[in-house]
Amino acid sequence: KPGAEREEEPLEMNFVRKHAIEQAEELGVSVRQAATRIFSNASGSYSSNVNLAVENSSWNDEAQLQDMYLSRKSFAFDSDTPGAGMAESKDIFASALKTVDVTFQNLDSSEISLTDVSHYFDSDPTNLVQGLREDGKKPASFIADTTTANAQVRTLSETVRLDARTKLLNPKWYEGMLSSGYEGAREIQKRLTNTLGWSATSGQVDNWVYEDANATYMEDEEMRERLMETNPSSFRKMVATMLEANGRGYWDTSEENLERLRQLYQEVEDKIEGVE
Image (cartoon, rainbow, N blue to C red; front, top):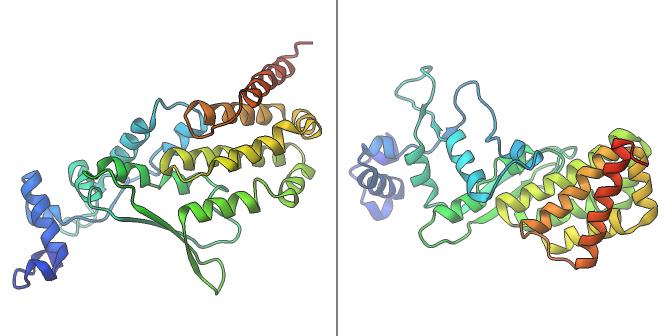
């Protein structure tokens, strides 16, 4: 019998029922409906599209990203109507998220980490939960690393820092990428864009990550020239991402750095357009 329907148990021993009753009263739905806890995309749909908005810089603010997540991920699995597709339950989904204390994701492949692909931050509701909670408290966020037999659970911020050190800011990694030419430069750009995605959905990217990325790829003249020659389009996107990180309040840096980036953007734009 589902926990929410175990009337014989006192509420202080059955928090599933306790919370379902509270949500049912708040929303004017049945306890069974309010007990819904498994949500995803509509049948045939995938992702929250937060990743596409970040990749294309086509979002106004974090509230817009959070509304996208709520709208796209609010379709409930319903055991009462198996095989009938999922019904949108946005109010129930939002009500459930308001009580979340912990968010969690799992890494199960050593080939794919937090910034290798965009679907990890696309699935992250950390800032969304904070915005929905009445106390405005950010939930604790954890990542399980099960890529080896020695599985570990780290905080999201720890995992983001580890990922930055082992990929984006690691000379062995980025030199390996650059040795493969055009596509390697695009892979570097992708990691930087996905780092911005984590800032947008969780706020768990330290300022030094952007500062060190700037020092590695923008301050170093030789590195700038390599990126410019190897893949000017990806380099332009990297410069734009750094400026965007500052403009959205994720990176606090000097005016000297910002002016260099503005000049670099103009230079790479001229190169792409064939302006001498």
